Length: 339
Image (cartoon, rainbow, N blue to C red; front, side, top):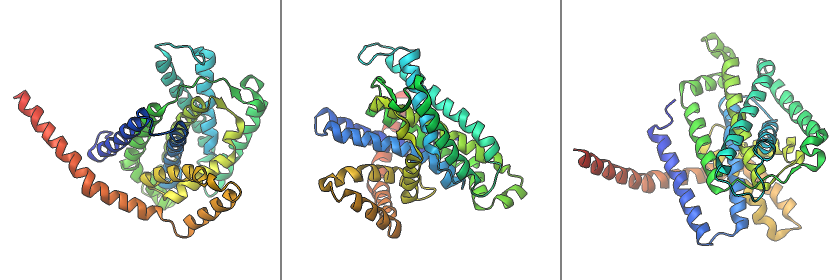
């Protein structure tokens, strides 16, 4: 995989530009804390949706227990920051950010290890068995968290230090999009898509389907764990009800609306469907009616692919030439200085 290939660099530049715009709006108080909070929740959902896209969209495995891996990452990173590193709610320390990164990585690795252990027996099965197994794991984990009083039980794990901010969440969004996009467009992604199209034909060509399914499952769970850690340190709470199978269904819905196999569509759908319930708050009584109706409309006549196409055209015609032009000028300038 080439993480810094041309297309990926342009994606990263686009996300960094978005971050700069959001940061500027926030510094000048043009964005309220509430709007910024909703945007950060949308980006965390984008990490979840892009990671699930790797399993369901590119590899063709139907998983509805993705929230369970988010829970593993959330609780593990919260325990690391609060009990291992003893980071207080308001204790200033130069090592807070370093410890936070370490806790996120440990939480992500814990999710990946659990996914590997779950994936070995289940991903050898065919048909809908993975769906049932991941749903069962999700339910078992929620029951376990409700009964683990050392982690707060049904009250939840509280008083987690608030360490997540726009920079951390945007940074992990960039990394997850770059890694998963590269994986999907590498030889590993091609063979995963071959497994998705026809597993029997792929195996007859010498492709180890179980290996590629486990690889995708573990990588997706790694980023789901990171999203869980970011969410726990944003809400300052990790509660079992945040990670039930309804959360898994919500992420799956975002994936379907955005389009299977489309990374950009996953990001767009996650942001739109996270903000939509907040936009509908003007009609408190009818919100629970309007939202399902809009979802049905998305299913029947999905406007996101058209919107995605328009954004892609604006990017290719107006934004990309400007960035490439300035990059060329800078390259010539520095080349001239080095001569």
